[in-house]
Amino acid sequence: MPLSSLSFEFFPPKGIRASLRLWEAVSELAPLGPDFVSVTFGAGGVQHGLTLDTVKAIKKHFNLVVAAHLTCCNATREETLEVAESYSAAGVREIVALRGDPPTGTGTFRPHPGGFEDSCALISALAELKKFSIRASAYPDPHPDATGPGADVEWLKRKVDAGATSAITQFFFEAESYFRFRDACDAARINVPIIPGILPIEDWTRMKRFARRCDAHVPAWLADAFETAVRDDRHDLLAISVCTELCSDLLDGGVENLHFYTLNKPNLTREVIRALRTAPTASLRYVA
Ligand code: FAD
Image (cartoon, rainbow, N blue to C red; front, side, top):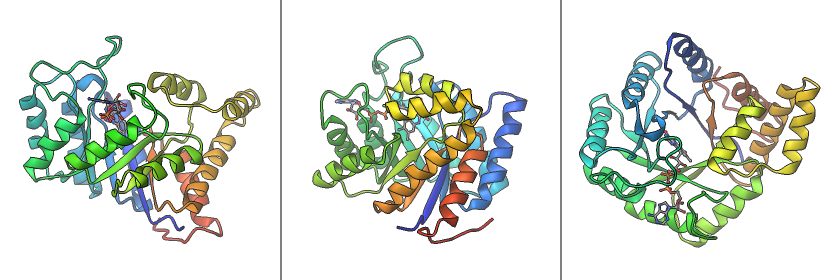
């Protein structure tokens, strides 16, 4: 299957150096022709002004479609919807609507007393505004809060019934995880695009920390390969080949859209896309 649609996730910068890095990342990746880019919302629901500022700047300077993330952690319903309204006023028409995590170290999610109780409630309220198309999250490997096998599929079904019109998955490292989840979603009659979230491994140590935090499955073969590659200083080559292979397996299995978690670093994402677009099986829509 040709790669027909691309998207990139960025996070809002917190200082001048980080702003320059973000600028470089967007400048490098925009020419690849993404269908949309998304901008994350501060963990724990903090510093959402940075998301809005980043969204506005990307829209203004790069003329890209921007999906703004929104979580309902640590905020009343009114405060959360105010942020949505500020997105709308800035011309945003797509929201990635999430429950979010509690601030670091405070354990399991507890809704704010005046806030949305979960992502379904947030999605319903956003759908009622009729101002946005709503993307939800999806979890091919089980989310830590899943109550049992199939729970993440059932929950995604509820989010779609509440008004989500597409989903972006958490990152995963084996195409089988995605295909198992997609088949279960098909069986549950979830009829929206489920876009695989792809994490090129820029920094192995950081990725392990990140995966531990969100309980993402890191296969033993991947750990062995990276431990050796880091030792031999071949990390980048391995990162490109592992990620290209994963994307290529997904495309062979019928996937048409890929969403890259760029971490504001363009190089690996760009190299992977270049490899996919020059591979004999991929159809080319090269814009750069
Ligand atoms: P949900 O999908 O609502 O819940 C996750 C799982 O928990 C469900 O699949 C279900 O199994 C279970 N569950 C949750 N609530 C219930 C319930 N009431 N009853 C039964 N089961 C339940 N975090 C940020 O802070 N900022 C971001 O910008 C951000 N962007 C993200 C983008 C994507 C594409 C993804 C996949 C994750 C993102 N996250 C972000 C991380 C996310 O906030 C965490 O994974 C969080 O723990 C779950 O939020 P959610 O909306 O995905 O949860």
